[in-house]
Length: 331
Image (tube, rainbow, N blue to C red; front, top):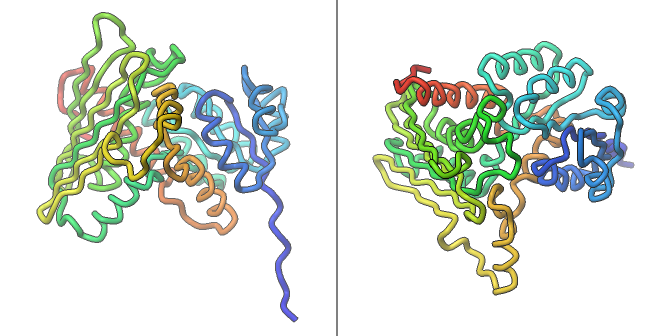
């Protein structure tokens, strides 16, 4: 006779903040079979109706009902809510960036380590198949020693006005470019210094572009360019990785491997341009949630750690300091 373990009880997950990114996370939690709960200053009822969640009237009520907290709030309150969730004994997923400052990011990582809880920064680009494939190729030595890395990310300015306030969002560097800064670190390792520039449209401060140059301790150089465009700007992301043994390139505007008919193309173009279209691939947002849930059950690793999230904040803050001072900033 063989014995089998009883099935694990569903995770009880509390989503805090029910804006746009929570709608990307929720399908992943549903796929894990989790019992969804939510709390938000606005939009909680609509989220609950869409995803079958239980609405709570306060953070305290939510914490009492769940095992895991998923922080999807505006950036400025990430650290505060993560600390509260850790104090309540919960494992935590936090949308990137972990915090607005290096000090706050390090503090939440140290807090999680101190209380023995998992803290997962949702750096979703590590779960996009193109970037994951590039990471495997670089790790296997397919293009040799990395020398120059170029990343570009273009999209519409987010609809919520707080993104334009750098004291609340960190601006284009902390909100958008941090994805490619994290990729540069993931592929080429620690950063020695950062130099950055930004150009803001005279017609609308919501239209802006930034460029950061990262010098890695390995000697590799990464160029990260981000653009927040006017409404209607289509989301696009590219990378170009050059090593002493070859070159690896990707452009989301090129051949995606999937051909859309006219109806599907119209649907694809109807997005807000702030988040990338993932209709032609397995959802990276679901993948990161599934990996985190599996790691919780098996006490295993995830491909992005809390320390990785804090380091991405540190390098992004160095880029912001370079924008402020016009100087190259040592990390």
